[in-house]
Amino acid sequence: MERTSGSATLDRDSALPLWAQLHADLTRRLDAGEFEGAFPGELQLAKEYEVSRNTVREAMRRLRGDGVIVAERGRRPRLAAAHEIEQPLGAVYSLFASVEAAGMQQRSVVRSQEMRTNSKVASQLGLDPGEKLFFLERVRLADEEPLAVDRVWMPGTFGAEFLTVDFTHTALYGQLLECFSLRIDDSRERIRAIVPTKQDRRLLDLGPDQAALAIERLASAREEPVEWRRTIIRGDRFSLIADFPPKSGYQFDLAKVAGASHESDVKSS
Image (cartoon, rainbow, N blue to C red; front, side, top):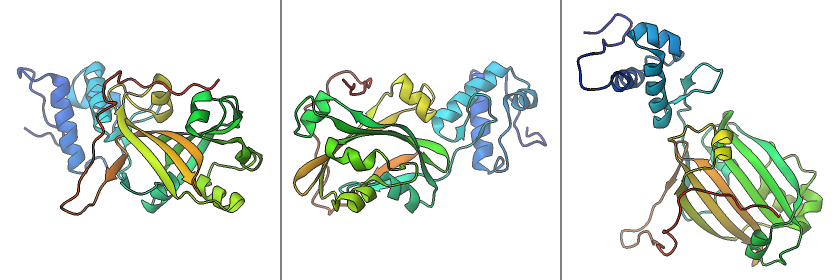
């Protein structure tokens, strides 16, 4: 029997847990567009459905995992952004361009913009292990919601110009073209699903059961490596699409699939 509020009565004699019944009913109401104005808080839901706050929290946790609501500590739950960022395979992606192409506001929070050494990354760029590199770390936002943690290393020769650039709303590749007349013309990417680190979960506001993608890229301009980038991106806000002729398809490289699934970042030395 439906209540006038739009919520259904939960069946306490059912074998289905109360949190699962609540999750199902909230999903139904979300699909019907009932919460377009505002999503109710824990106390309101507990009173409306006559259940404990623990039951509400578990249902809310599942909704966060579904990617349909955002619930941050100390803030009222709200509906997740309806837009999803799409990126075609086979093209050098620009997160800046992809976000704006989706009609969303792009902004970054710069966490680090400095010169540092990293022997592993230097090797990727074909440089000596102790050579100074330009390092840029940003939390990328789309409509003010966390989308990705972006970590970029470039040869130190770019540092003199890039150390003073305001990267809060500036495309790195645009600056590369403007300052050095260089355009990325070749890249190799590795994309895989990961279990993010605790730090990246915090930066991306991810729940414990939400996944992410790791995109690693070695990019070149005029046949010289100019960038090694590692982006951790929310799986619920980003998708990869592919169009190809009927006779072609994906090529899988299974050589490096085995091993631990939990991510650890390349550490700076």
